[in-house]
Amino acid sequence: MDNVKLFSVLLICVALMLVCEAQLTFTPAWGKRSPGSLTLNPLIGSTSYGQDACKTPVDSLLVIYRMIQTEAQKIVDCSQK
Image (cartoon, rainbow, N blue to C red):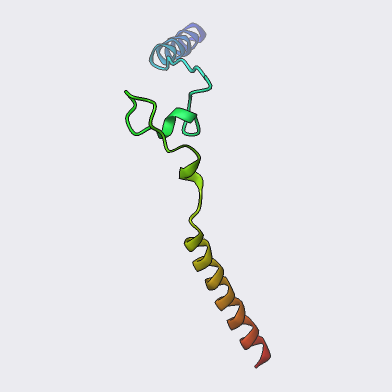
């Protein structure tokens, strides 16, 4: 009986090893944050957004700043009542 259990566990492990085969290689050009990941055409590779894609427009920052000021003023007004 023990041999049957051992054989079945061994068979399951072998089957999982055959099904779950993979290779991972990590290189500098791997992942979302790699310099070449923002290219418009992966075949060309020379046209990329670079650092301009990460810059926040000043108008957006001003809108967020004004929203924070408005909410802070509402909190001050409510605390004074």
